[in-house]
Amino acid sequence: MEKDGFTKQPYTFTPTKGQTFSIVLPGHGTEGYKWVLATGMEAKVVGGTGQSRPGVKPAGAGIGVSVPQVFDFTAAGPGESTISFDLIQTSDVKKLSTENRKFTVKVP
Image (cartoon, rainbow, N blue to C red; front, side, top):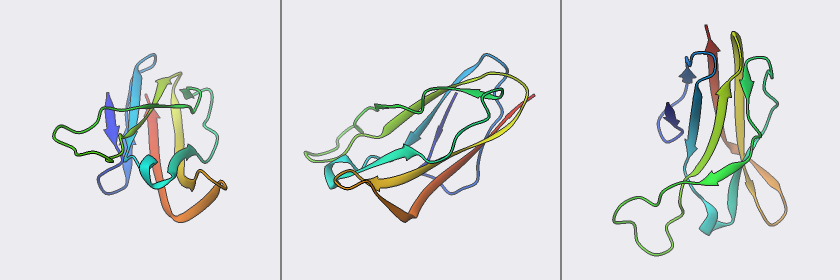
C-alpha cells in the first residue's frame, strides 16, 4: 500500500494490522531540502523508524531532477494516528512552514 504526497490533502490510510505501507513525498534534494518526520506517531498504531529511503526517479526525468523520498511504516495495532512531515533546509535545518504533509492512519 502506498500513498503519495503529491496530491491534495487530506491523506488517509486504512491498513490492516501487520500491513506495511509507504508514504512517498516529492524530492527536493537537488534544491537542498528534505522531508523529516515532524511529530511522533502512536506506537501502538504505527511502527517505523521515520527514516526515508530514495524513491525511483520518474521515467524520462532529466539531469538534476530529485528522486522522491519514501518513508516505510507498519500498521502495529488498532487505532488512529497522524504522521506529519516538514520540509527543511538541509544546510541549517530550517523548517519551511509552508511545506507540511499530514497523513492519518486508521487501523481497524
